[in-house]
Image (cartoon, rainbow, N blue to C red; front, top):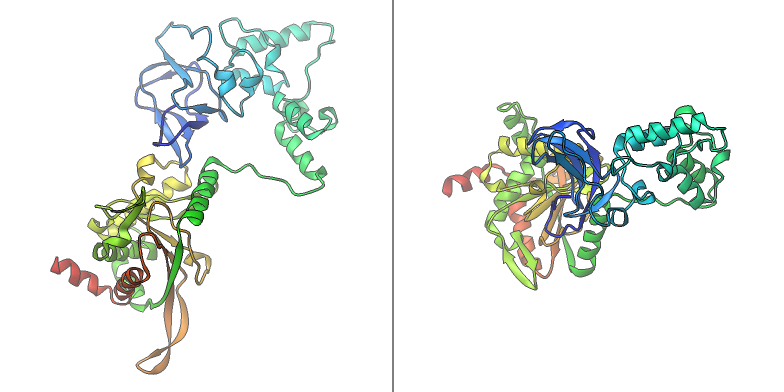
Length: 420
């Protein structure tokens, strides 16, 4: 199990991309691992034959073997790494003395077979061991008929106090699966049901709790006229094939404003204010399993089309659960845009150890004074959340004023780039 982050203790095995016993080539995608931040594809470190000793769903300590890459003709070790069964969480492997191959496990579930009943012939339970056990029971007098439920379904039924034999199974041959037990438990439960959050959601919950309880937040709100921002996007879109969003424009403008206000691009680390040497802007992205913040590194050095391409790439990887640790690291400031959901204004929680986060609402037409006369203009409300340990009200207001000026007159960006 690889370490995908500095503070990572374990990882969850999501899926094998190659089957047990199949040949693998060094460098090809081998397995998907979920850390506390993202799901990452891990490449094969060598060429050979894959011998799997951990299964999808297993949570394995960093450094613990999850598979062997064997030379042709080389046999799997007689037993897996020390204490594998006791250290791997949420795994059916805990219920058997020997590990089983994924093929053997799927075959056993299909036939409602408890792997603890199967005798292994080569150090771990394989497909032929399961088939041999099934044939032996078929040849018997029927006294030891297979249960019409998977081991996991039987365990869940015991925990929920349900009679597994009374449930209608949706598996092969009418076998009761874990999903059938869960559905029945929800139907018969007297109260609300709990949901086991993903690792990403758990880390998000931990981080926002840490931020909310340790960082003294304050908020600055500013309404800005977005008419020239809209015009800029329309003109810029004519010159590039990459789809431009308002988030792309805001990344560009925020990076420029951060270049003038180093304190807002700082971090609170070990009771010290650390001025970050790079401007790395994170974008909050909602995915099925939680909230992730991929980072556009050195955003102040990128053109608008480069930012858009990078944003498009990162969002696509986030939605496909393919973000790498580098995609999520070293952010110095975060933008959270809920305008596409019709939200007018909201306050975001600072993403530690960063000092501030910008919450962006939708662009909406409002009646505002223009040259002392009422006029309908496209307006947008910005909310800057600040960690008071790093930024005081005056510094936050000065940054927000610079950003508002750039949004209302993007040509100022060109002037500042030329002057530098």
